[in-house]
Length: 389
Image 1 (cartoon, rainbow, N blue to C red):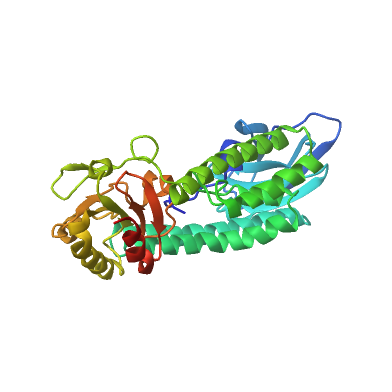
Image 2: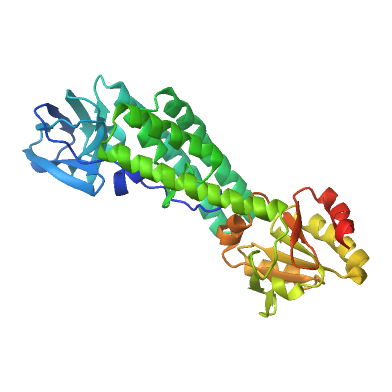
């Protein structure tokens, strides 16, 4: 995961747009129950979370006893609703014509909601619990990264580890019943506007495919099924384009002026240096971070190669993704090659453009400006250089 930050709040379905609007029909759903800790008479709202956002469908005034009852048209397919009291709310799902008995505490409705005798809503509670646990971990890591007590690589690795905790739980739930509302709910949890399950990642995409296929079979031609199908197919198309580009960068010689993405970034003195300006030399395009445990040893090894092969027309164009500019400048000021920094740090588009999954990663570029080798195991580096020097 290359782009992520911290607060995951609510899921794609709940804020933007996966669940469809209610379908009118003869069948009804009844939502009744009790809201405890109500200090005075207040309005309680029943709201539907649909493709167009949150819509109020009914309301009732409740007293300190907190009892309520709503009736609404039954949806033709699973739908999400919430009961809201002031700024407190609790979400639940309806997947058939039925009566739901809902209980919650007005002081913390989101975490205390219980729908009696509803296994599918029990699963939603489990999803929320895992989600909030991961959210707390990510926020802690983000704070540590901002305070510079956690370096860039450690931050990336630990964030990915935390996200994988949620993914491991959610994957089992999704594959257990991909046609369920809980599978949908788990699939579309988000991290600061980025889906936890990345539809452009081959492994994560399998989850979208499983849910989309099951919903197509169970609920064909419904607005939600159509939306999911379009979303999934567009993600597949984009992912294939990205994979084709990555394969091109990995295996096919690419001319800098025509196809290989050029890079123009500033060195420690503020001078702009373009990767394409080094055409005519054999270039090692090195992606790294200085604020990491591997960096000193990594740069010592590069310096050995640089001094050995520079007389043969060898150059290094090193791109740092350090978030701490001052640290990078102090460390990079004495390196003898072209050292530049991307101020977007670990959120840089260069990482996805060049399909970089790990740091450090390098590409060997020949004198014509074509990528001839991708290097992740630096023990292979000298051998790859000898092929083109």
